[in-house]
Length: 283
Image (cartoon, rainbow, N blue to C red; front, side, top):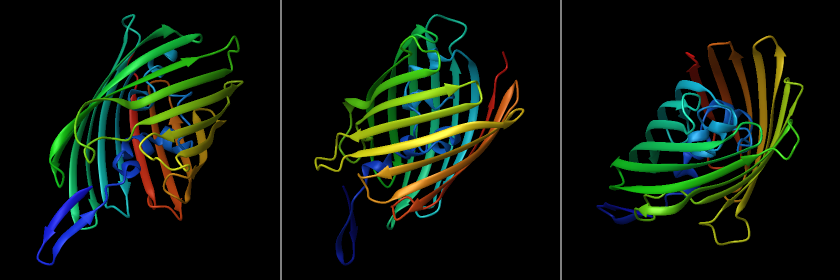
C-alpha cells in the first residue's frame, strides 16, 4: 500500500500485487498469447521469470527485445534478455526490464534485473533458479530482491511436460509494496506432431489469504503454414475478478522469431494489453 499526501489529506492507493507483477502476467508475447499457460512450455526468454528450468529443457542461444503497452494504466515496458543454455552445462539467462505505469495519480517507474541458472537433461528433467531485483525510481521508493525456483520433467512421454514453479517465494529484501507476488505455478503441456502445443496452468497467489487465490490458464499454439504460428488463450482470474482472452501471431524463421499478442480484458482490472518481441538465434 502506498500513501500519497495531498492538500485534502491522505490518499491511499492500493498497489495490487497481480498488476505490480505485469512481468509475470504478460511476460512475453508467447506466454501472454497462450493465456499465461506457459510454465510447462517456457520455450522462449520468458523462462527467465516464469520457469528457469525451461532454459535447459529446450537448449538455445537467444537474444530478445520486447515492448508492452497496457491502456488502463498507461503502462510502457521495454525488455532486453539473453539466454544461453548451449555453450555450458549450466544454462544462463539475464534480463533487464524497464517499466512505467500509473496507479490513480501515482506514476511509478521500475527497473527490474533478473539472473537465472538452470541444469538438466533435455527432454527428461531440468531445474532452475531465478534471482530478481526490482528498483523503483519514481512513485514508490526503494528496492526489493527475491528468489524463485522451477522444475520441468517429461514422464517417459516425449510429447508431455509437467512443471512446478515457485516464483518470488524467497524474500531477500524489500517491503510489501516493493515485492512482486509469491506464486505457485503448476503446469502441463502437450506437443503434438510438432504442429500443435496445448497447455494448462493453475497459479496460486500466496499473498491472497481468501479462498479465491487461484487463477486458471488455458492456451495453445498451432503452426498453420511454414514458419507461421497462431496462439490463443483464456485466463480465469479468481484473484482479481474478471477474465481475459488473448490472440497472437508469430513468424518463426530459422534464425529469428517475430511475435505479436493482443490481450483483452473481460471485466478485470487489466484492460487491453499489446506486446511485440523480436528474438534472434545467432548460433
